[in-house]
Image: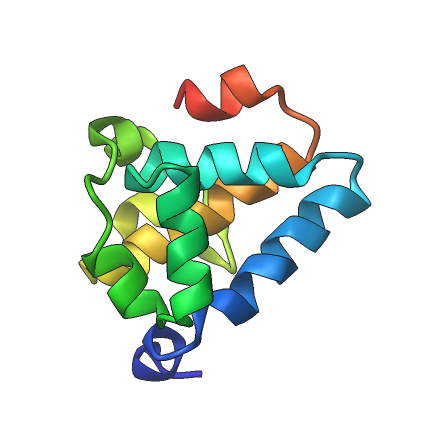
Amino acid sequence: MTNERVYKMAFSTVYPMLVQKAERKGRTKSEVDAVICWLTGYDDSGLQAQIVKNTDYETFFNEAPQINPNAVKISGVICGHRVEEIKDPLMQKIRWLDKLVDELAKGKSIEKVLGK
């Protein structure tokens, strides 16, 4: 799948998959929302508005109020790529989100996940 195709995916399509991934491991939708809001700066209503508007991934991140300055500390492998080595800024933000939800699903406490 090309980056451009990923960027044009509707966030409202991806969001339920992120929630399902976490819920399968005993985590909650509110924890996933907390991770998303921590990373992007959206509040709950802003996050829901993006979902309702059916924005694509690119727009979702471009309209994010403020990417958390600590996001650059997120490291590790997701989808076979080290997130800290991804050159494309938008793809890196997408993979940061994937990594945070993955860590949550692996059983790490929300405090440890957001402490990155």
